Length: 328
Image (cartoon, rainbow, N blue to C red; front, side, top):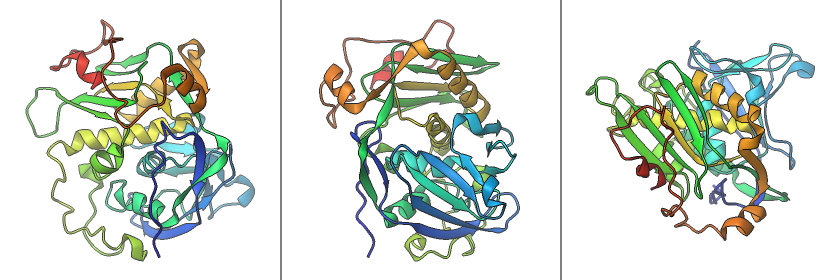
């Protein structure tokens, strides 16, 4: 029987969470078209997220899912440990775990990359749904933003602003569309990730539509018949959000703030996290109980606008939309 999923809303659940039981599947890697085995296992409180390569010496196989582990960002993100053992293609999986509120998990892989499935996080959400998510006897910690942190690399720009509710905004030019910047904003509460962001795929990650991508019955309803059909008119931007959320999960705590990205990429997100952890005066580590004491209990409508209206800094790229959209 498939467990009923109770997403723990990583920005508002008081307790750390892990999986209720191990779950396994196989899929095809993006780069070499080889079959890869993937297993997600429960992990103890305060252990965080780690990858374990099952095809190498076990004493060198553990890779922390941390911003410290980023060693490459192009053509895709590579996480590696001090022995040089690495894993590619982590963003959709890390985004799915974050979206489901899984704080502690061991991820076993049989090769150097995570299965790509259909290029989105939806099959991975279903995999987590199969295992179920349970609360643990440890308080969840979050990053509470006290002031803006930003980085600019050429025309690319990213910042995280203080806010009473976590949200994400992307400005970019959609490939093949008009050359005018497009703007998309979502609150990250109330299962928005599951509905609006997780299904998005990058055009380069679309698979061929065959049935080799998984042997797991609980993923069998994620068929590839629509592999060449966009799921959203703005799917490219939604996939940018998915990748950004997956990379920001490497901060190892949910970030409670308003995130803005202009033409985001992995190199930009990596630089933003480095800046965040260098600027220790810009944020505090708080438990959710402490957040409640400061703000009152956050409800499902907690992303309302407030009188404390923050706008982008003067050197931020100009959006065709009002900065107030960031607070909606």
